[in-house]
Every structure is written in C-alpha cells, then in structure tokens.
Length: 503
Image (cartoon, rainbow, N blue to C red; front, top):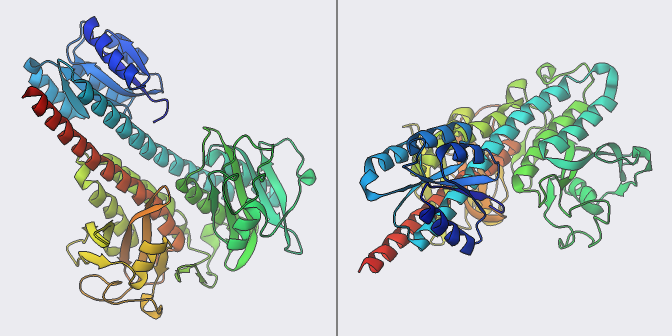
C-alpha cells in the first residue's frame, strides 16, 4: 500500500479539514475535493486507492459520483460519508459496492480503521486485476513464440524469449542463457535491456550464481535480496543491476537441461514475488519446448510425450503435453481470478475459486484446508454433489502431510505407489484412492494451508506445473479471505470502542 492515496470528497470545509488532519496524523497521503466533478477528475490519478465520499454534494448526488467512479476506476474502494438522516442513500451505495460507511460526526479511530481496510482491499483488487492482465499477456506471448518466423531460426526464438520474459515480469533486464557444448557453463544467448554484446558477457559455471544454482536444482529460483541470501555471494549483483532481486527459471525438457531464463531489475522496484516465478516457469517450459523442436513444429503437431519425470515431492510430470493442455495453466489461473473478483460475498470467495478448478481438472472433490489447532481443517470444498473430502487432517502423515510441512508439491496419478501414502489421509472421505494433486497455500513463504484435488483417472493427469499455478492463484484468494476476516474483527473493535465512548 506504499504510496496509495485517499481522496476526500466533501463540500463542508470543516469536515474536509478534520478528515485531512486525521489522515496527516496517520501518515496517509491524500487529496481533497469539494465537489463531485472535481472528485471525478482527481480520481483519475492512479495513485488514488480509496475515496471518502460525502453522499450530499452541491453539483451532483454522491450516488451518481460513486457509480461513475465504479465505471472508470473499479479498483478504487469507496467509503460513504453521511449524516444519519440519509440512510436510504447509504444502503443504496452499499448495495452498489461501497466498502464501508462512516457517520458524521467523524470518530477518529473509526476513520483510520476504515481507511486502512479500504486501502488493503484496493491492493488486493489491484493484485487480482494485475494477475488477469498478466495471464492474458502470457497467452499472447506464447502465441508469438510459436508463430516466430521460421527463417529467423533459433535466433528469433531466443530474442523473443528474452524480450517476453522482461515484458511479462515488468523487468528492465532479462537474458536467455544456454548450456555450452561441454554442458559445464551457461553462456548468454540473448539479452534484453543490456547494451553489452552477447559475446562479451561472462559465462556462468553450473552451480554458481543465481542462474547456475537454478539450473543445477532444476527448479525456479527467485531472490528477494541477493546480498542477504545465504545461497549466493554478497557481491553477486555487483554494479550491473539497479536492484538485488532476481528470478530465474530453468529450461528443461524431460531430463534434458538446456539453460535458464533470467530477469532482473523489476521496473516497479522492489523484489520479485512467488507469482513472478510461476509466470516465468510457464514461459520457460514453452521456450524449452520451442527450442527443441524444428521451426516448422507447433504444439498441435506433437504426438508423442516424453517419459514422465519425478519432481522433488515424488510426483510425476509429463514433459510434453497435447495442444489442449498447453493453454490450460494460464486459462485455469485466470478462471480462478475471475471467479474471485466476480464474487460479491467474501465468505464465498474460496468456494467460487475451487469451482473452475474442479471443472478444468475433472476433479471431485476439490478442497482447501487451513492450518488450525495443530492440524489441517477443511475451509471449503467443491464436491459436485458426488463425494466429499475429509473435515480434518493430521500433520506429519501421508503425502498431504509432506505438502503441509515442506511446501513441496504432489502431482501423481498413483499416490498409493509412494511409500509415504496414507489411505486415511490421502483419500477423500469415501477412502477411494486415485490421482492426487496437492499443493501448499502460502503467503510470503509461510505455509497457511493446502489445497488438494482428486481428478478422474486417465492419461492427462494434472502436471506439477498446473499445481504450481494453482498454488499461486489460490494463495491469493486465501489472502483475500483472511483479510476480510481481519476487517470484520476491526469493525467489531470499532463498534466496541463506540459503545464504550457513548457510555
């Protein structure tokens, strides 16, 4: 929420100044408007995240201002400010989507809590909108990758990949590095945002630096601050980069390693996040496949799948998928985002998020658990009216326990073949074993719970990559719900304060 502004709209100078004084004391940057027309102009400022809107304005009704705000800035949260005599207008605004209501005269603590809630909701809404935009951009990028002019050969694919990585993750610099013939070093094959010629860039030994570590481990690596990350030398970034945050994804096809796709210097500043690593992983998978196929090939023409590879958690992941599967991950993540943003009642957000998962994966049930009382408690599920998942699960047992304790992913069509399988934990309530997809729900690297799905048995079981995408999307949905619960608690606290104040 750093830098988010509040727009205060009231035609009465006394209330404008009183609210401004409280916001100044809370270090909340804000703008002031005394009419609806001025408010609509100021609301075009992208820094505005919340609006405190008086229901009665001299030039237009507050409801009209609110409706127009919703059309041009759907991400902005609106707090209605009104006298007690205007309840019918307040109710109409709340029905239209206002996030809160404040009655005059203003209670300072109530105002601060309402503003904090509104800015937090704004940040979440922006996050979901940004995720949907990035998923659409990913679809366009993958299309460009496979439609690359055959005459450009690998050079065109490499340059497209480097540019696409930078655009997709909003990074100032990116590079595609490939293994040399001896498979002992990574050499830069294409760059974006750097003026140094490719041939003058130093190679990176396997296991060295962020790129070498990502390739050696065969998994995406994102670094918030390389100067404090114990995996790397303190001077890893040197003076070549404006920030110390990196994201790197390996290029692999089956058991064969090709290189890595790297991004650095996030355009917005700050560190790359888990969701950035997921996006980069999807792009890297497609780049690897594109590089290992002839320029005339496309996903639809591939007919044979490479042998399944085993991920760290003991799951299987097909290295080549059908054309139908190619777009599943981005479509599925976008469907989850759409379901979450379309749901009005926050308590139903998680159920709405699971429904497209069940449909896309042909899975019943799909459930979500949160850590509680030393175990996992089912928060919600989508059972399709067919079968339900278990209400509570213990920690430290079965493949599900592995996911909860380590954050590793399980995606397997035969969980019973794994020695860690526990039929009392890794099956739905009916005890029937079958394909299992289970991943961690996390926030800032901390596991909050797990999700799991039981797809129909078949040849197109969900891949580990699908699980990673779902983990990022569902983690965002859970953060939204937990925030909502904290807001309810804050409202109850305010009500208690007001009751005590009245007494």
